[in-house]
Length: 381
Image (tube, rainbow, N blue to C red; front, top):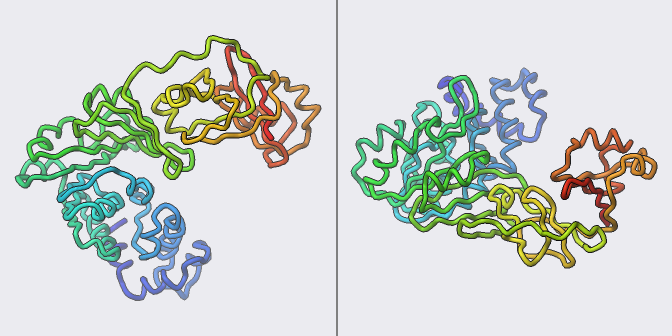
């Protein structure tokens, strides 16, 4: 977003146009000659509609949403989850300010840094609309601010930019901006504990290698892994998996239990358990389910005699478990609409539908997996 676009969106007649056209098709708005700056208004309507679920406070306040900053922002649900509190917090990379807004509800004072002057202005404007009077937006880089900082800070929060100048995704911390590993001495100098948000692709073992005394947490929402958090506050090492709204498990680092030595018996189980992706990300599936269910792979399904409770995931009742036979399935299901669940299975969803003569639907629900080299079809009630 340019400064000119931001200034235009702040004008009263443009604010009214956005408010009056909420819920309309953005394309129709863009073509409506009665609306001032119709294309710009249409873009805001598009992202405000998407903000209904991701950023409901921003939607309610009709905040200004630059597209790129919106795409890179945390959801409000993930931002509110972070286990930080105290008197003062410093957000090194505030972007659209979603995490800074959440920090403002837990801290007396928050300083939020944004090096892009237009985005800093947008964020300050939005935070005023949201009533976050204790959050100060400062247009500077993390490196410059920390070099001059003298005030003690309780927590530093960072969500580094994980895109190269050419748009390539970055995973290694040293490649992201700012380089948090290089800034750690400056963060420690002001007495701060560090909370670092990483891509869900970041490896938990690597996190503990770099931060040996940290708590490392995978956070998921609706069975999609959203972020991997490192709490560098000396209270670890600890690995945890949190499914927002569905529960949390935590264990100190250790080798997982061995897979069952007994052969897989398809007649021995009444329930199929689908571990949440946060459990899979942290390789905690077998540890969380030890004594409750049999698990042959941290990436696969779990099988049990009783429903699995208090562990993030879904329990489904089994009707039958059979060896995978595409010809038999095709004879039985051809033309049917089925819901497919699969883990540790070599065929894609497209290949499964093609080979069984089915299509996506809700007439039947089947799960597919591989255990000890054999392919299985699990028919669910």
